[in-house]
Every structure is written in C-alpha cells, then in structure tokens.
Length: 391
Image (cartoon, rainbow, N blue to C red; front, side):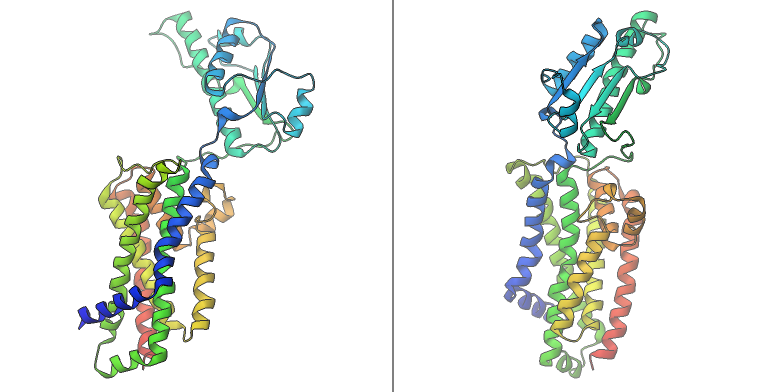
C-alpha cells in the first residue's frame, strides 16, 4: 500500500513542471547568480584598489615595508598635493602614511607606544576591505619588527614583539569604524551554496501544499480514507518521496558549487576537509524539518489561496531572519540573536560547520538535533490536524 501511494506522489510531482522547476532550477540559479555577484564582498579585491603612500621616513625598514606592501597591492599612485580631498571624495581608496621614526621603531625590541603607520581609508570603503587592509598592515609590521629583533638578539633569544599598536587604521572621516571579529568567514560560494541549498529544500512546502490541497478539493483524500488507508500511511506516502527529492536536490547543489562555479569564474566548493557522515546528517535533518513543516502547513490550509498566502511569507521570513539572504556575520547583535530562532539558520550553520570549519558529527549534532526536534513537533501537529481535517 505504501509503495503504491509513494508512486502516486512521484507521478504527480513529475507531471507538475512548475514544482520541479522551483525545487531544482530556482536554488541552482540563486547559487550561481549570488555567488558571482557577491564574490568581491567575501573575497575583497585588495590589489585593484587605488592607493597612495606618503613616505616621511627614508630608512631601510620603511622601504622594506613599502616593498612588501607593493608585492600584494601593485604600484601606488603618485601622491597628489590634495590627497586628503581626493580621499574624502573616493578618488583614492586609501593612503598609507609612514611617519618619521618608523625604521627606528621597527628595530626596537620594546612594544611601540604610538603608531608610526597610518592607514587612512575613504569614508565609503567596504568594512571587509577596511579590516583586511588593517590586518595586512599589522602583519607586515609585525614581520619586520620580529626580523629586527632576530638581528639584534639572535634567533634563540628573540621575543615576539607586538606590532598592533604600531598601526593606526581609520576611515578618513569616521575614526570610530571598527570591524567585528569572529570565526572564519565563508567564501561567496560556501555561503551561497549552503544558504540557497537550505532555502531550496524548504521550497518543498510549495509542492506538498499544492498537491495536498488539490487532493482534498477533488475528494482523493476522502476516498483513500474511506478505503481504510491509515492516517500514518497517508502522511508517510507524502513525506518519504519529498525527503528523497530533497536529498537529490542537495546533491545537485553541492555539485554545482564544486564543478560548475569554477567554470563560471567563481571559487570552487572544496570537499577535501569535509566529514561526509556529518554532512549527510545535516542534510537529512534539514530535509526532515522542511518536509515536516510542509506537512503541517498542508494540513492547516484548506484552499490554494490560503496556501499561496502562507508558505511564501513564511519561507521568505525564515530566510531573511536566518541568514540566508543576509549573512548573519554582518547583522547587528540583536538580529544575530533573532536568527537563532529560524530553522533555516540551524540548517545553514550546520552546513557551514561542515563545509567551512571542517567539523565532524560532534560539531554538526547540535544543529541537527534542533532540526530533528523541530521536525518531530511539526509531524505531531500535522498528524493531529490531519485527523481532524481529512474526514
């Protein structure tokens, strides 16, 4: 009986080309378009930024710092006389000022008491770019200061000087701008594959809800109930096929990230550090949560109009809150706290813990547990609603 009901669901889905397009083509297009559109946001194009250098120290250490910076950023623009005005209006992205006494400071063993390198950025510079420039300046200064310590004391006795106070980085008209710190940030492909994979799996709500409403409208559910088909079998016959469809959908999205995106000029989704059991656990948990929510909504609504009003709003709201449309690491603290209540965020964080951080089952389990608990609650509500409405 269950096998026949599952075949019926798959046949109905195969005939619904709009549902198939929503399940497979929609997330694929989102992954491709958003990954390419936001590539520079996640991987700042530091080398192409126009910059100038104001050299007020002619010492060898200052020249070494300038040489190392040019290796990663190309030749600077000639410093114009009105560089401050050009910086304010964005004609220059940033200006590095090497203050007098920098070479002497880099040769000292003591930690710096004041900054000798000033990184002045134009007011509208992207926060990710600004933080990347600041971190690179600190790294180069630390490298040169450590080299000076090695030359002074010898390799075995050299301390680890702190160069952070040597660099002052500020937006030219907004010195209060400071970037957030945290864990590793995903690439554009990692973020968008994980995000739109989760969003696409929750799109199964549309297919299940529309089919459920149509079967109730034409009397198919009432006839099946009249033939003695148990409620559990009817719900399982709808859950299992779409659970499998979601797994197929996830596999396709991962292949797009791994093989198609590099051909289009994006980053490749790497699987060399992926713990496959953890990835399968998270994908199955997301699928269970999406299908269970779809069943609950299908049992709750009665007409196509109700279904069309409920599921798009719910899907978009969960995506907007949960970090699908806007990454959580750029959200304010209050919104980040709110994101933790979205099932899509649980799925997204679970996938990122595996695809980005190389986590195993232990790291993925908390996110999967939330999704499975959510799925259990939705299934229970679906069963109660189905018993009441499918009579």
